[in-house]
Length: 357
Image (tube, rainbow, N blue to C red; front, side, top):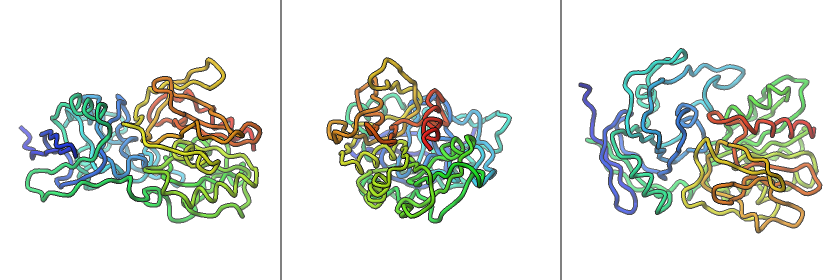
């Protein structure tokens, strides 16, 4: 029988959960959040929006299909959403030491150890999720047997967008394609893939880069981790872009930053939306879509200026899922139309944006 070390998760309210380690043996801390997705743990682990968080999988089993190749194709990882793991740790009820998949090149355990990320299994994730739902996402820390204790860490008190963003300009797609500037707040690779496969030439710039003097046809504001209040430099540049008037689209953090540039406010959700089955409705219609989501903050739609209006609304809790300008080509979504993982029902968002260029 495989011998593993004990691991203890402690929440800031004093709750403790004891399990075992299947990743790198160390202590770590972050914001404990849960995701209800049944698949796509490699995509979730490489989603920069999980930076600084301890990710709890409510689906009871992970690891059974291993980890895909990390090969780079066309300037980005072919199968993953970035080039590294971003959460501080991942927690599950049961971990499969055996894996099988046509594209698997290693086990999840080996990958976590390679990137020095904690993995914990053997706890009642239903009980843990119930605590997080009732009390809200909270700080937590995991200490693996034999490792020194650490202090609690609140990732929402620092600029995670700066950490997750690229540090230099990168180019993707055909040189003669429609010119899109993408502001990288922690972008998922599939957003870039969705733009490029539709013929766009994407210029990816750092979160605080003043792109307004560049030759571009449309602006895309990407997803990213943490508190949008720390990305004020991005908001300033978006305001300049609004004055220029070229088409603008945002996703997730991009929705929040576009709203802030338009004068609206954001707020922290009790436990966020992290799943692949969130229903949203297009405002003013009966059209409903099942979406993939990963966010802990939301736009306060009641603070939108009179020139703006909600575009989508969440059917579970009524929170904002997108905004649009009433007369100009500016719009955004809080959900992830690029999915990866999750449903692709709303990939038409990319067609709508590029159709404006």
